Length: 224
Image (spheres, rainbow, N blue to C red):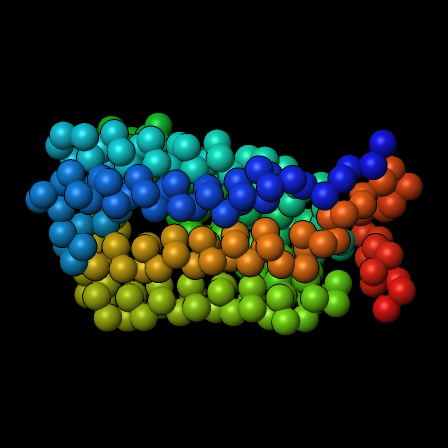
């Protein structure tokens, strides 16, 4: 039986997932009066007093749950090995973010730091790999844009490291201004998820039967 093009619920799951995470962050910021974007990072929201920590933890956990249907279709529809590697990186990054909700930085600082790094590194690597796979599959504009997201994300972190992190000797999660590259990364993820859900790949999901190999570019590309 062929897998049909995902319905609106599956496609919108990919769009909604990072927005759910952003909503949790916004609610946590609004309920954490002592939190400052120039002196605190996102991780501090998870240990803030009052409901802020609950909003933050619930946001990252729900993001992983909501993203699962979309991630499953991404895993079922790679067109080449490069896209497979990109999807794998997405899964690693998003699953690490999901686990962050269970390991706050005060009780599990080492695990929290490792998961945070896996999330941001994972999604950045995914942009490069998945975007390269898109280009190889003929979706040049879409793929180059995805690669561009990776370049922007990496550049923002490098600029932060060269300016605000330079000379800092404390813990990474307490570094000044770390919220800036973190929130840029979240916003880029929202844009990428939207473009991927409604872009050319959505049309290629129309038919994926048992007689089609994962690396088969599909009827549209063969006819082209």
